[in-house]
Image 1 (cartoon, rainbow, N blue to C red):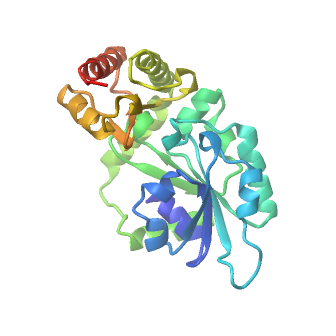
Image 2: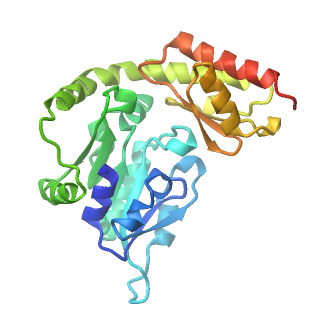
Image 3: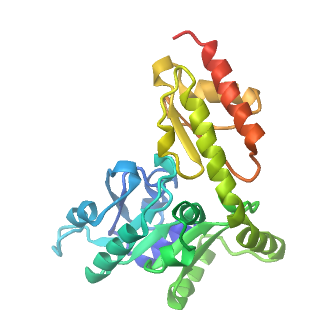
Length: 286
């Protein structure tokens, strides 16, 4: 809802939102960008999900009456479907400055921006200060049971509040959730380095399993995505078997599996997951 509200607030129906081809807003939000905000995603593939201005600029529509006009540029940090890859601060700043010079706002889907900050050794405020709006999750890595936040200027939030009410997102008696969110903000970031270490360890263990294809060195935050195409067994079937063994993960494509470390996963849990994958694949005929 945070991403949708940002898009709806910045754009008008019939405009386009530039984003990476595997961006969350274009693939995993029920086409709400079109169904509710009335926009079309204008996507481009980027290595590791990391857009640059050179990739974005050709997608900006000329000011011609028969083109859908560009309304917003969106970045995702970390990039979920690319395995938690991280934008460098300099790339984000360059995109924001050039977009603003072109008269375009930039929204950050920062669901895991705290993970990015830890990976870069930078402050979240420093990484986000050039954006016009930022959505980030109190759940996921920060550990709250529920909740996300949308940030921006006072005028932007005033408009977003109206949109939130229209979408049924207003809440009352929400103090318990707010308290959990405060704890997540205060305590969650200090635990993220452990999540990243566990993810790298998981990747290293999985990379040694016959039938798994994975570049462990590319894992820099808390998401591990690996291929089982060599086995020829659908990822969904393997995930179902893993679930029966107490390991919860999900397919991202026919032969691709995604695992995520977080505050409820310790090193023993990581070892259990790797061992379960090894056991299942060893029983599967190639």
